[in-house]
Image 1 (spheres, helix red, strand yellow):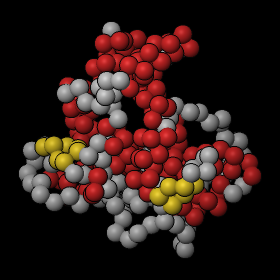
Image 2 (image 1 turned 180 degrees about the vertical axis):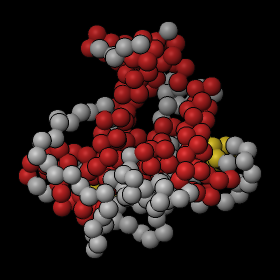
Image 3 (image 1 turned 90 degrees about the horizontal axis):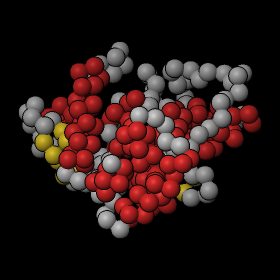
Image 4 (image 1 turned 45 degrees about the horizontal axis):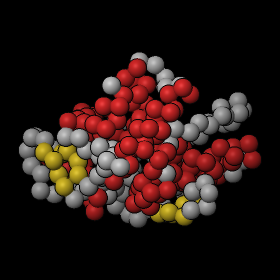
Amino acid sequence: EKLYPGFATLRGEMYEETVRFFEDMFRNDGSILGLLDADHTFLNEALAKHYGIDGVSGTEWRRVEGVREKGRGGVLGMATVLASQSGASRTSPILRGNWVFETLLGERLPRPPPDVPDLPDQVPGGLTARQLIEKHSSVAACAKCHSRIDPYGFALEQYDAIGRLRPQAVDTRTTLPGGREIEGLRGLRDYLAEDRREDVVRQFFRKLLGYALGRESQLSDEPLIDMIIAKLAGNGYRFSVAVEMIV
């Protein structure tokens, strides 16, 4: 809060945006692909200013369309994700990349070696957060895992520690595991929505099923998840399709 004094007053708004986004998806039977590529969100004046979006005044919440051209849209453009997966004083491509890797794609990394040094809270002078991470990740013991998560985080480096777009252009070009080159939020979003669509959908409904059953999803649940995914693809990925099958 010393470095970002506006954050304390915006935490509630950030959280509320995410709740309203998902509630709208659920209540109005939206496509779950909107998780990645929605062109709308829910804003009041304070959060709209934080995002640099004009035309929203007052404390009342409203649905705002056309937000992708403003660098928003879907969960990857939300301050909740961008801020919660940052350090207290700087961005963390490692945390953001691991969030994409584990939370959206459902993959897991082994535990890091016990002797890995901690990164500094403040980026040393003359380095960017990306350069700090690249230097750390060049160590042989670290590179194996970091090469799988850091590129996702590098793509989101245009956003600062509390989810604002940085005024100066930042290098967000990166090469993902498998060799695909992308740039920025748009490139990452397209990759997830196209190349990794089934992985994201499977992870979402694996978590939804686990929530409904009050336990982790298991190997014996995979045939049901396969059925859900197949039926979703033929029904516009509408949320109600999965709910009915789970019930």
